[in-house]
Structure formats: structure tokens, C-alpha cells
Image (cartoon, rainbow, N blue to C red; front, side, top):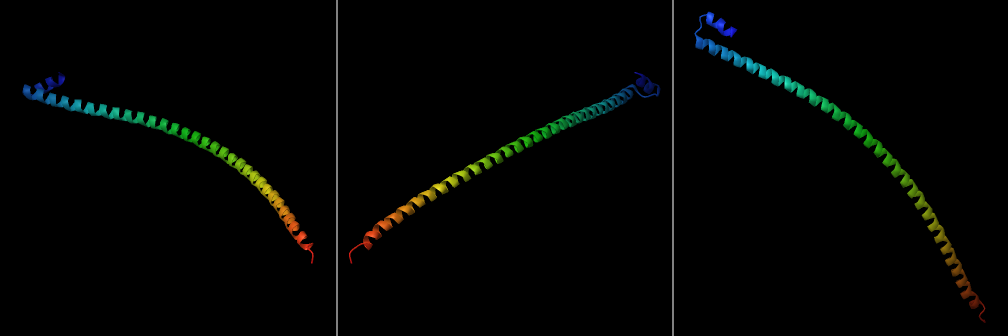
Length: 126
């Protein structure tokens, strides 16, 4: 009301004074609304930054855990491969010795057969 009285004492018509006060009130209200929106936007930005920081920290922790699990799985896989390799080498060596034994038996049989065929042929009367 004080502003209205000041405008009235300045010899402004009542309608013009009321219109000016309404315009000034509207400008102040818009200004306050913009300030409130800016403040809310800053608060929202701060909240988002905090959440982003928390998410980043959580993501880094998850990545470290994943990397540790991956390294553990890799070491297990390497051990399994070494064990499998040694097992295969043992089986191959066993197969080679079995093959060599069978070949020897075959050669002895071939020599015996050859001798059995040649000696009677050598004893034939001439």
C-alpha cells in the first residue's frame, strides 16, 4: 500500500497508479519465479552430480571386482590346461609304448614266420 500512496501523492491518476503497481508486481513475481527455478535447477544439478559420483564409485568397484574374478578364472583355466596337457602327454607316451610293444611282437612273428618258411626250403634234397 505504501507504493500506491507514493504514486497517488505524485498526482498520478488512480488507474494508472494501480496499473503500474500491477506491472511492477508481475515483474517482481516473474523475477522471483526465475530465481526459484534457477535455485531448483542448481539443487537438481548438485543432486545429479552427487548421484553421478556415487554411481561412478560403484561402477569402479564393480569393475575391480569383475577384473579380480576374471583373473581368478584365468588362473584356474591355466591350471586346468596344464593338467590336461600333462594328462595328454602321459596318454600319448603310453600309446607310443603300447604301439612299440605291438610292433615288436609283430616283427618277432614275422622273423619267426620267415625262418619257418626258409629253413625247410633249405633242407630240401638237391
